[in-house]
Length: 334
Image (cartoon, one colour):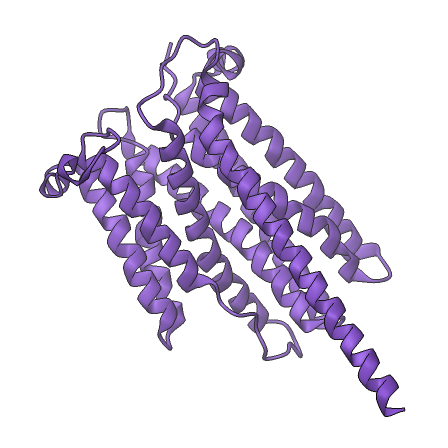
């Protein structure tokens, strides 16, 4: 009996290792494919529009994608950890935090973006091209430094005993991104920044929250607490989707007046990228609805994890497209 038991345990361990290796390979493939969107997307979006891209648009789009992802992961963790406290009988165990790694990635991305700002929004060819002192003299430079320092502080908070304090430096990153997206030269920049702030925060909670919720449910196993946690998340996610839709719609109208939206969606790089993002969000909404139906009606509510995993994958693409959207030329108001 003992050899048979040991053999069964060995086979189970081998199966878990293979499963983990398969997931790791799948994640690496998805990350590689996701990186191609901001790198190759500018040329595709600009093709035939008559617009010209700024130098290094692909690299800047990739850095912004990493920055957005680095914001999603820790905010989602904090969000779902708070939700888990409200689940009756929830296990005390939680998945390992990836917040410190995310902060490190965000710091590197912010450093790259700050170096671009320090060279007059040009790609630096060497350290001599970077004017660090010039960052303090411009609005964009100050915001870039704020993001850089905020990610550094967020990483320290993630490694401390009071991980909840991450929310403050992460909030500073979100505010900086909202202000950066709306320079003072545009009409009502504070209104635009407020809309972008709500949009960025809601998107971060949605994307990062779903990722961490699925990790938590997988760790808990086939327990009622897992289904309850997904149910709590689904209810909040519905509100987040509504806020994202409203802020996105208003921001689009501010960028492109209603009478020109349909034309600019196909004739400008910004419009094409926005259209791709809208279509992807529609797919995400359909997957979220499918998961919610399974959660409410299926004999095993945890079967909702299957469409939820697909939702996470599509949301990762949405984040990449969002990074691209910030790098292509802003459409001219006709």
